[in-house]
Image 1 (cartoon, rainbow, N blue to C red):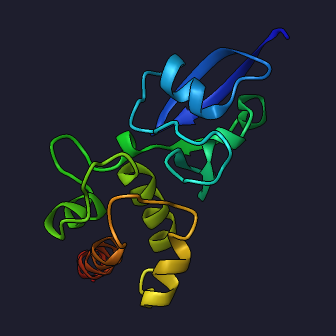
Image 2: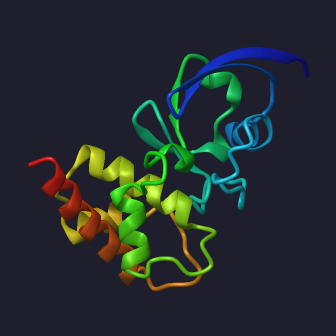
Length: 160
């Protein structure tokens, strides 16, 4: 396999990259851009640890060839918040105790962000469906769902 050139916007910054034709997006983010918040786990699109937002949609970056994202907008966990300020979803995960080992947390937060961008006032069922592609081995999801509810309320209050 050869190398190809791609142009992407990651977290608001433009990049021109030379990547292997068969490289997956998760590997390019982690290895080429040193954005290690996106976790690499199952490599089968089953766990959601590698979730990023691609052109406004939550995707498993372990299943997407980097060659397919030429010209795309990508948001990773590192792109949330600003400076020293956490994003309301990140804050809610901390205040609600929705983090334990933390491995799944970036993917959960990115899935929650995509959900709240599409549906700012989700029901509990909608939150559970929105997070259904993300697995956590440490919790029973109760605190994670609560964190998304709290974040939704806080974000709605900021937009008023």
